[in-house]
Image (cartoon, rainbow, N blue to C red; front, side, top):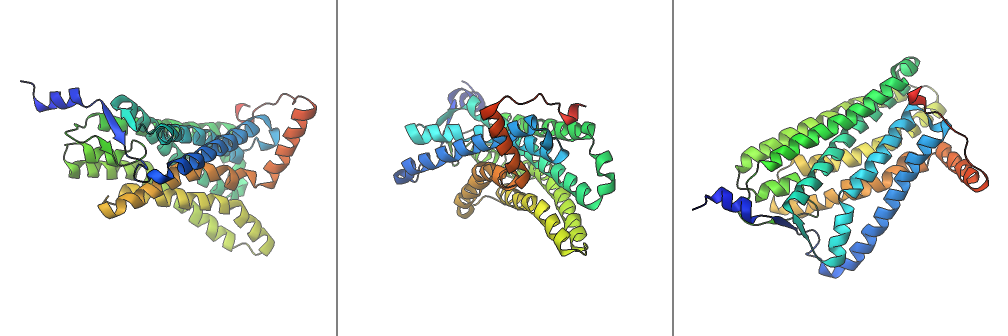
Amino acid sequence: MANPEQVNQTVLTEFILRGFGNLPELQTLLFLLFLVIYIVTMAGNILISALVVTDQHLHTPMYFFLGNLSCLETCYTSTILPMVLASLLTGDRTISFNGCVTQFYFFASVLATECLLLSVMSYDQYLAICNPLHYAACMSGRACLQLAGGSWIGGFLSGSITTLSICQLMFCGPNVIDHFYCDFIPLVKLSCNDPHLMETLAFTLTFLSSLVPFLLTLMSCTCIIVTILRIPSTTRREQAFSTCSSHLIVVNIFYGTLLIVYMFPTTNVLSDFKKVLSVIYTVLTPLVNPLIYSLRNKEVQEDLRKARRKFMFGPCKPVSLFWLK
């Protein structure tokens, strides 16, 4: 007779993502809403990435990191929304075990990468405002490549470790995931492993991949605010606040929702609330990032107009990327 572990591993071949199935009357509206969000998010982030690469005026460390963030957001959104749209359109919410693990791997990797990249961007702004005399030396082309590359490598390494821990779980019964994508905590709740041990693991992984970058970001932002408040000129103070306010808004929204979801115990009362918060940092944050960071920036708007004129009236001149010099 086969032991229970062998039976479970043989029988369990798919999960069911509950998603928004408890709102059947809103399925069409949600599909149209998420479709528009996905199209706008992809278009905005791809536009920013292309503009940063092709326009020499944007070959600066700040826009180099923004280009990385926009590229990251396209990957981030594409790990979740296409499957959500398919389930809303067809009503089929099933996902294979391998598909679930794959989705979780890419989601966890890009999420950790974004945490690291936001802390790098905070450090960039800290140097620009608090230590401008050493900015050029600290943020050379090589340093920018190393910081961005380290964020991507560190994020995918963290995602690999988390995914390996998921693969070690044993699933004993129900296969309905109370979420709209495969996430760590909902999967842990379906496993027959020690829940306290897995919650401790979730807390530890979140602490390392999210809380530590958040604390570093918070330290940078605090130093920036203190430095700005010491500026005697009101005009310069307003200009400095305008420069860093966008980053502060994104950081507060992203980290605030992320830490609540992963570091607070999941109860029946908080379950639906956490699902709403998940929509904010997985769907809405990639949508507003191009608007908050770049598209409302006068420099970017001017470069967009120039790019449109070049596209309509002639080819662009070849450009060299500053970080490869």
